[in-house]
Length: 114
Length: 112
Image 1: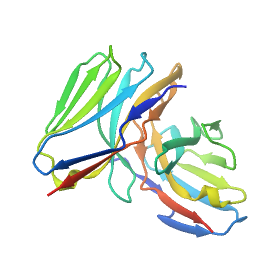
Image 2: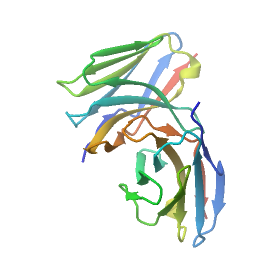
Image 3: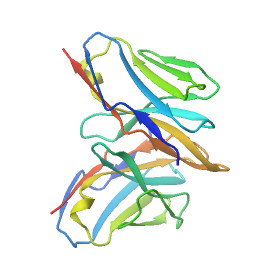
């Protein structure tokens, strides 16, 4: 089956940029996602990128997609303590027609030190 | 805003008990999903449903069953709870043909 890999931990200082990386296996993935999970909460959709794009920017968030290397990254500019959370990368696995499912990575725990 | 609610935030049950976890969404989504989340293992799909009375096994269905009698409600059932089912359970929903899933707050289940 498809697989999504990401490092488990990242620690940065407040005000620095954070870069969370992810690799995926399904070259036919049409959508790739970043979800955020704050402590004790469910997953919140942060952003997504369609496979025909290389980059997407949304305020402090920048998503970069390298389809050749099947590499996705999430950059958070001016990281704040409120950004401390687990970040999940996910790819869409198509079963056929409109059916399919999200394949999640194990999550990267971002710790922001003041 | 999409709202996905789960019946309990925290639940403690004993081994062998039958456990019901309820999930309700208010956005008329066709698709609903149950995941469990464990440290170091990420999210694993237990069951999902594309429509009322339909269900599909995910990656780890053993020990679980589901029920979808109404479009807005998707129930996860542990027929006989075991300690290895202690976990965080997350429900999600989405429109048919759309990939974006919306998650509930999760139920942390402890089986003693």
